[in-house]
View 1 (cartoon, rainbow, N blue to C red):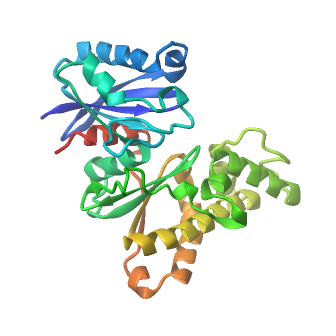
View 2: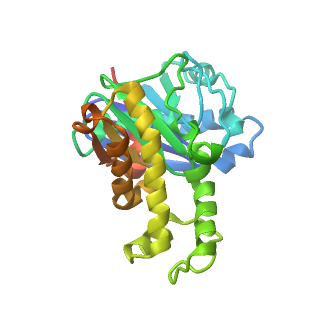
Length: 301
C-alpha cells in the first residue's frame, strides 16, 4: 500500500504522520511551532524539517498539509492565518516543490482535512454527504459532498464559526475558547458551584466536563448553551446545504453527551419533517489523529 505524509500545522505544534492508505496512521512526530517562529524564514525552517523526514522515509512522494486559516482558490498558497501569521500570505507549495523536486504537495484548511479524514479513516461508516464541525480554540466547519471537500467559490466556505449568532456576536466569539471562559465566569457570578468555585482563571474543558458528570448545575448550563447555539447555527447550515448528517469533532466534542440533547431540541423545533426525519448527529471518531490522516487524504485520487 502507498504511504503518504499528513501534516497538521497548528499554533503549538507541527505534527507529521506517516499514513498508509489502508491502515491509517503508522507513526508520527511533532515539532514545536515556536522553534520555527524564531527563525527568520518560517517556510524555510519548515522545509528543513521536511527534508529530515524525507531522509527517514524516502519512499514518500505525496504530502498533504492542513493549515489553520484561509487558502488561495488554486489551493497552493496560504492567505489569512490569524493564529500563525508567520505562515500567512505565502506561496507555500511553490516554495516546497522548489526545495523538494519530485515531491507533490496538497494544501487545504485544517477543518476541511479533518472532515475528509473522517470519511477515509473514521471508525464508523459515514455517508457521501455530511457537515463537519470542529470545536476547540475556535469553531471550524467543512462539508463533504459526494466524498469530496466542498470548496465553495474561492476555496474557503463553511466558516461556521463566523456566522452571526446571538447578541450580534459570531458563534466563535461566544463558544470559542475565550468566549466559553467568559460565559462560565459570568454564570459563576450568578450561580454557586461547589465544584468549580467562584471563578475560572484558565478555561479547561476537562474540569468543566468532570463537573458536569457530577451533576454540577453551572457546568451543565454551559454545555446546554453550547448545544443551543450550535443547533441554531446548524438550522441555517442544514437549510442552505440540504445535508442531514452532522459530525462533531474537536476538543469540546468530549462534552458531546451534554451538548447533543439541547442541539437536537433546537433542530426539531426549527426544521420541518423533510429534514428532521433524516437528521443524524454523530461524534467524530479520530480524535487527535484527524488533522494528520485528513491531510494525507488530500493525496488520495
